[in-house]
Image (tube, rainbow, N blue to C red; front, side):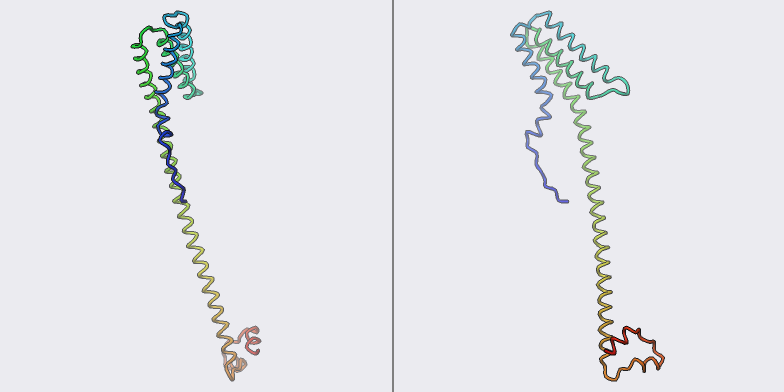
Length: 203
């Protein structure tokens, strides 16, 4: 019932939030390095990135269509398409203004898409915690009821044992009285004692 409270490290909290910015920044940096190494105004490289980005977008569209569509695969394909498009433009352009503009747009879109999944994950986590707390409270209530029932049974057993002990003590005390005669009691019309009690009293 008493679980230890584990405080998450601040890096573990910030890392998922910084993921989209780190991804787009990495793509921009690598594309500018590629630009400095011969990709600037290279039609062949630009055509290659265009084909790759278009293919990734088509794969994402196919993965999101129909009942068997997988949102995870579709999101990954669209993210790859956007990254390839950003890398192509950043590698082909001679200035930094257009790549930076595309980087800002790509980062904003990435955070917009990620925020949706974060909200969904947060709702699922809250619902799971609520169900867990409800189950714990229900189990604690059942445990308390069972403890009360067991205590009541123990008290009943104790009272029965005490009554039996008191009855045995009374019979022994009565048998020890001077002049006690069970036969005389029977003749007087009193109920006859069980044979076991008569033998015990005769002793």
